[in-house]
Image 1 (tube, rainbow, N blue to C red):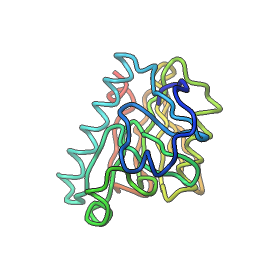
Image 2: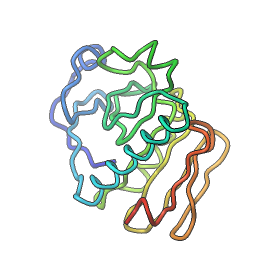
Image 3: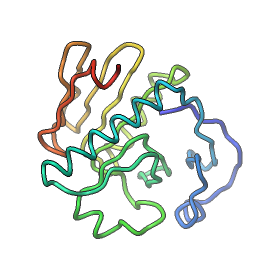
Image 4: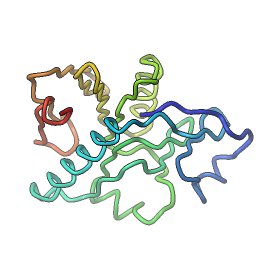
Length: 179
C-alpha cells in the first residue's frame, strides 16, 4: 500500500473501469495517484507475488496473481499491491480492464508514509466487497496481519504466516518474506 495524492476531481467509476489510468485509484470521486513505494516495499511486493504465484502452480490450485491490478470495491476503484484471483473468477473476469469486485485474496504492503487507520479501513473496504482475506504487511515492524470477515491474526518475526480461506495451504516465514 502507498499513500495517495489527489490529482483530479470528477472522474467517474465508468471512466476508470473502461480505461484505468496507471498508478491511480478512484477514491471518494477523486482520481488519486499511488505514491510512497520504497525499494524495500517494492521488493516485498515482488517476493509475495512470486511466492503466491509459485504456490498456486505447485499446489494445483491455479488462478492468477497480479500486482497493482484495478478492482472495484463497493465504494471506489482500488489497486491492491498483490492480488490473487481464483480460476473460476479468471474465467469469468480475466479479460476485463478492471475487476468488477475485490479480489478474493489481497495483500497491501504498508509504506513508511501510510497512516495505520487508513490501512485498516482499506482492508475493511476490501472485505465488504467480496474479498475473503487481506494481508497487511508491515515491513518496518516485522508484522503481518491476516484479516478475514471473522478474525484478525497477527504474525511477527519468528512466526510463519499462512492463508486462512484462499490459496489454502500457503505459508511463509515472516522473516523470509520481510528480509
